[in-house]
Length: 202
Image (tube, rainbow, N blue to C red; front, side, top):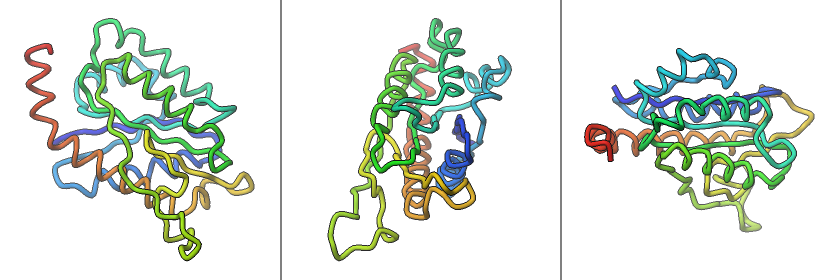
């Protein structure tokens, strides 16, 4: 069984809602198993060891706050220095998603931070390939995919007067599901290559 972890931080339930959608996409592919892990739980040494030993891919999720990942998620990132030095995550698949109150809201900066973090760990980044579909006057927002137009990772919008039971909206969840499925299919095909790279320490 190919295993993919989703490590995420959520404050108002928005990122958790998005994480569950990514998980739905992952688990739609036979032979692949996804798991949700909060960034707080991922601080534990045993969890970090499990991520290093048993997962081929790790997807990172965080709210965008003041144009960057949340403080809680940064704590997780900084806790991985023991992973960085021996490059225990080298050649694992990586990807990301984020959510904020605005359509843009500098979410690309958050996704860039996460991509740089993955690069420092020697990981292989998989972007969003969904072409935005909400750019014509004849189209309805609820029919759109990748409506916020992010490609480095999933960028979703959540109304600040709604909690994680109602936001992000269904169209952002559909984008997250599609991304999870892509990550799952990509990782499943990549698994033999990852095993070979690991064996030869490339």
